[in-house]
Amino acid sequence: MEAALDLGDTAADALAAVDVQVLSRVQLAAGVVRVQQLIDRFTLAHSRLVTAADQAGVWRDAGCRDMADWITNATKTSYGTACGLVALGETVNAAPEVARAVVAGELSAASAATLHDAVTRAPADADVGSLVDAVKGAKPKAARQAAERWKELNTPTAESEEEREDRRYQRRSVRTAPPVDGMATTTVTLPVLQSRQFINALNAVAGKPYEGDTRTTEQRLADGLTLLCDAFAKGEVKGGRERPTVLLVFDAAAYTGATDTPARTANGDRIPACVARLLAENAHLQRVLQAGSRILDLGVTVRLASEDQYRALVVRDGGCRWPGCEIPAAWCEADHLVPFPAGPSALDNLVLWCSHHHHEKHRPGVHVFGDAHSLRLVLANGTTIDCTTRPAQAAA
Image 1: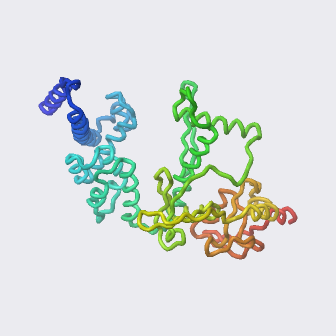
Image 2: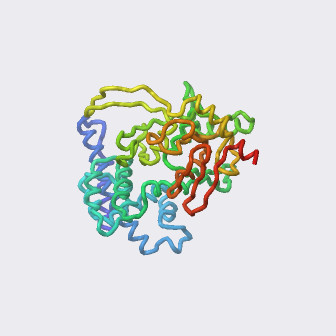
Image 3: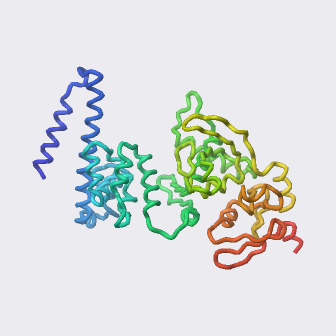
């Protein structure tokens, strides 16, 4: 071990002694790439040491929470970097083909670490090699997305896509840690789509950076959140139909339910098809006809529930149709009882729900009976609820 570390010191000293000022552009470019590959190999070797040290329990008597915490204290690196080392070590321990790809320069250490969840929880008969082949040459974000999709396709489960998305949605949360040095850390956990809407809203409120603006992006978003909360405290935040724009690209076959190909946002986020179909009920839709990669036609934008229909729903429903819900109409969403395009965009097929109860209505196992005038829902547990309009509830 000591001899190997001494060789590492020698290599580091040799690189440090190179006079970079005399190198040509070709040599500089080649050197940058080659050194990064060496760093990845060293990181791989480091992660194996970390895994062995973790298994040996070197952190247990040091008052640390886990191996990553011990690394942070011992090396003064960030906790995130330490977690990445632990994840990489566990990944290559579970799938040697990942290590071979890193050694061959086909996969960066950072991209390899993103495979952790898929590889360490892979079924015994899953072909991990196919995942490694698919992500060779991929950047960390693309590798992570590919791993998530591979895991969905290879994990034996009785869950449907709708049940899987509902399970994720139930994990949403906002947590605040105790203040430290006068600063409190709030952790917001949201499904990908709601997270994108959240960030877009903060961006819209905070405004674009201006000349001389010294704030970081994180500080600007924090200012946007503070402004939004301040506006609410002043009574200036109003409900309405307009939302921060999220652009989704969705295959026509998946839109009609023929396939479950995920939609994607302009930021590259993957949105489950079942979620995209629900969004389409109240979205601006634009048809794009393609032949291969060539765009043949851009159709006109259409809103499925018109402004006149929405106003009629406000008058008729008065607010969320869920019994006992007090969310006013201005904060509600128009929903097709029979999903579009099978169900028409007619008032008899449209009702208002608040965001929470809209999700509840679309949960797996929930069945809809009647139309907007005689609406009943049978929940997954067999409970039947009558969803009368707000004026009818008041009269009763």
